[in-house]
Figure 1 (cartoon, rainbow, N blue to C red):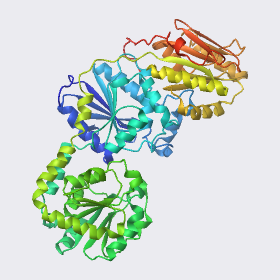
Figure 2: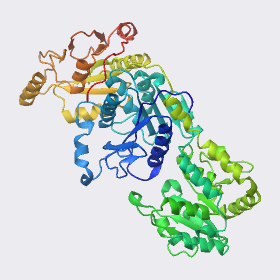
Figure 3: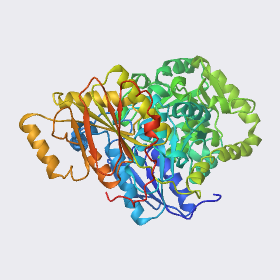
Figure 4: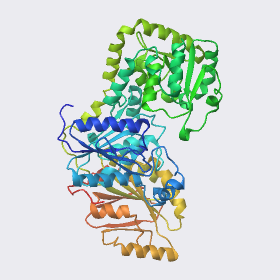
Length: 604
């Protein structure tokens, strides 16, 4: 693995690992094996509904995350939806999500076991990166070296616990202070280039993640006889298809659950071409689980030259079908797969199976050309003729199969560069102390522009920011919360909090809570307008002041609003007016020292 540090612990963060299926499951196995071979222990944080084994390899799995990245809404109450709703950060006074809090606490826990802890996110999204950008604000001591692997278009999963505008992500990432301790990777070159533009940071193309056992298994498929004899005694559908193959029929298989993005809408054209060419028999896998039924697939029931598979395939049955298939059909939506890796395509390449795929998918740039076992089409009514040409070429080039599969196998281990980089020796990087930026909820247009400029200047210096928005007491709490969550979508701050002082009996009770929790004794109080009573602060604000101490407090005073009075023990407070002279905060912000914390990791 090259030069790497003495083995510590790698914490794999996989919020959508739910069981024995999909990319998360296969990635986890491959990563655990690779890291264990380098002497690193591994712990995996998975989805709360995870129903797989308690350990993957030697790595224990902790089902802790309440949501995966694609769950914008809670699941049904029978699977814990009520609990998740109570933990929804939009109902609190800050944008600290349960996800970020869980990762923070897990890091603190691991640091008590292992001096050296590192983070790895195998299926990252912009939303996950945005949430992780808050960690340097929350952590004491060293920042954990971190690697994130992206395999989806950035626009698909930009929103998660709170809205996010992608153009705000580069500033959040720079302002986190993570620097080169965090590095991003992508599963193909087009996606890497797109992400580098979105993040304003380097992104390396390392291909998809395949474990050694997977590569060996698929290489074995390529070595099987092409006549189907090995599968003649196979169970159910495998045995029936093997008999068809021995009778002279070519097997054309659409692997994977048929979904809209995987060509569901092209099935009528594919079957129309099949009816005009008697050489092929088509195999289609119906949607399963939460993907529901498909009218296009249901219409194929009873077709004499189509087999519809409705059961889940075991690995053994999948390999048997891969060995039987004369050609694989991947009628994918090029708009979705233009920068998205197709794992099935890579499996087919390693198993040396010819592929007819949609023109414009990411694999075309690497796979098309002389000697390729793939052809890319726009018109799916022509697929039998194109497949026949491929089959004829693969028979003539049979002697080169060993070289082809060895070359593909070498490409499928490029991802090792990610784990090598993650576990390499490096100088420790301390977490920078955060800054508290206080402003009014109601800003004039000029003041709002000035606020954005201030936050950008802090981000450019690598200073993490907690943005505190203070509203007048007359604002409704729900309206304030909803407005702030949406408005802060393009903020450069890593975390945001908002507050207002209530009136009447509720206000009295709230002020008693402030006193009972010793908020003032922690050395920070904020008054708005002419009130002599402090506004209540989110526990996150008080905790950061008490445990880490802000490196400085910046107050934006909008001349059109009532003044703020901010008191903080042992912390410099810089008040900036939105009037003349407030255009640039650089001179004042330069007085805030970019101090690095030397405290030990906090106890969760």
